Image (tube, rainbow, N blue to C red; front, side):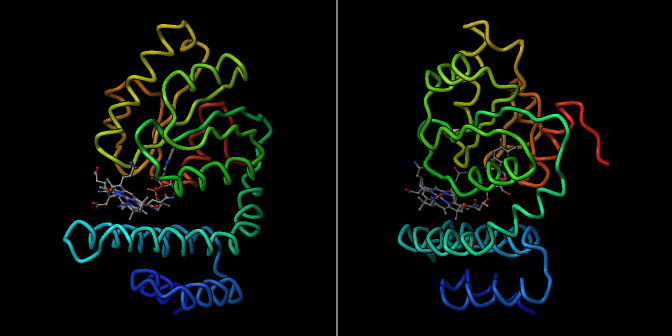
Amino acid sequence: MALEKARICLVNLERNCVLESVKSALESGVPASEIVLGSLSKAMEEIGRLYENGDYFIAELIEAASIFKEAMKILEPRLKEEASRLKTTRRARIVIGTVKGDVHDIGKTLVAIMLQAAGHEVIDLGVDVPAEKFVEAVEKYHPDIVGMSALLTTTARYMKTVIDELERKGLRRSLKIIIGGAATTSEFAREIGADGWAPNAIEAVKLVDSLMGIRDE
Ligand code: B12
C-alpha cells in the first residue's frame, strides 16, 4: 500500500520512492491529510527515535526534513482543498511561530497552511522567535490567537516566558494562546496557562474554531 510504502521509504531516506508513493497514494484517492499525518509524520517520529538511539545523525534528520518538504510541495494544493472543506464563517487572525532557540518548522508550517486553507488569516513569524517579536506582532496585528510551536523540551519552557511577557504588557486578556509541537502536551499547555493544545494540524483547525465559537457543520 502506497501509504505504508511512503512511511518506510521516508524512514530509509529514499527520496524518489517517497515522492512516487505520495503521488500514487493521491492518485488512488487517499486524502492528503492522511498521507501527512498517517504516514509522513509517523516516519518523522521513527526517524527521531533512530536519532535518539544513535542510528541516525543530524545529517539524516536534515535529509528527512528536506524530503518531507519536497513531498509537501506535492501535497499542499490537495491539503488546502481538504482544509477548505473545514471552512468557517468566523475568520480568526492568528500569529504563529516556533519559539526562541528552536528551528523546527515543518509542523508549524503545516498548521499555518491548514489554518489558512480553512479560511483564517495567518501571520507566520517563522522560527527562533523571541518573546519581544510575539509582543510586537500582537501590538501590530491585534490577532485573536497566538500559536506557538516547540519541539525541544528546553524551548517548550520558553512558551511560558512569552505568555508572561504578553501578560506583563497587558495584551493577554483579549487573546487566546494555543500551543503544539512534539515537546508539548495538553497538561503542559494547562500548566503554563495556554488556552489550548492540539496534537496535529487538523486538530489545530478544530481547536481554533472552537476557541472562536465556531461549531462543525
Ligand atoms: C526533522 C527534525 C529536525 C530538523 C528540523 C528541520 C526543520 N526545518 O524543521 C533539524 C535537523 C534541523 C533538527 C535539529 C535538531 N533537533 Co530535531 N528533530 C526532527 C524530527 C526528526 C522531526 C520533526 C518533524 O518535522 N516532525 C513532523 C511534523 C509534521 O510534526 P510536528 O513538528 O510534531 O508537528 C505537528 C504537531 O506537533 C502539531 N504542532 C506543531 N506545532 C504546532 C503549533 C501549534 C500552535 C499547534 C496547535 C500544533 C502544532 O501539528 C503539527 C502538524 O501535524 C524530530 C522527531 C520528533 N519526534 O518530532 C526531532 C527532534 C524534535 N529533534 C531533536 C533534537 C535533540 C534536535 C537537535 C537539538 C539536535 C542537535 N544535537 O543539534 C537540533 C535542535 C535545533 C534547534 N535549535 O531547533 C529531539 C528533541 C528532543 C527533546 N525532547 O528535546 C527530537 C524529538 C528527536 C529525538 N527523538 O531525539 N531536527
